[in-house]
Amino acid sequence: PMFCPQVAVLQQAAKVTTFLPGRTDVGAQITTAQITGIAGACATAKNNSLLRVTFRAGFAASDGPADHGATVELPYFVALRRGNQIISEQDYTIALHFNGNASTAMATSKPVKVELANVRDSQDVQVLVGFKMTPEQLAYAAAHPMAAP
Image (cartoon, rainbow, N blue to C red; front, side):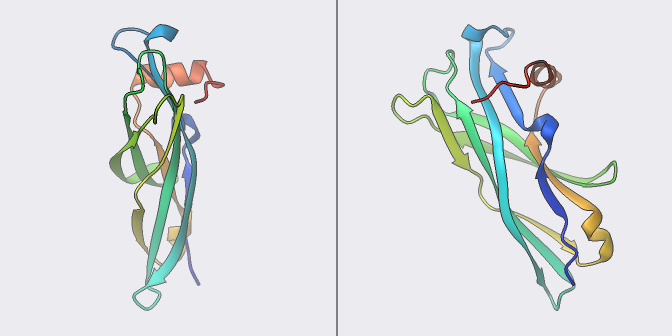
């Protein structure tokens, strides 16, 4: 049997809005971005003793008034969690390019690979993807749940 972990977007870190330093008004908005989904697969290796989880994350972003079509680079993380304990965390960056006069941009991450032992406990592991956010960005996201790219 395969004891694959669940791979999901962490809801509290699924959307981020960035602003020029020290401001939170509409004119200072650089972008609002969201993780649009996760796609991948889980397979066994080494005589079924190892699980290899490989996936990509999808991203979408808006070109805010303060961005002027520049490429936006946003930090995100992939964390392994069992219960309330973070087992490990890896940081990544995604670049979103606005082509021409496009007001939105989409991107897909490079493949992310996670390896776990193929044991029953591995099915209790969650692989969570989310934006790396400051306390201010987390508060803004909580106060503006309908913000979308």
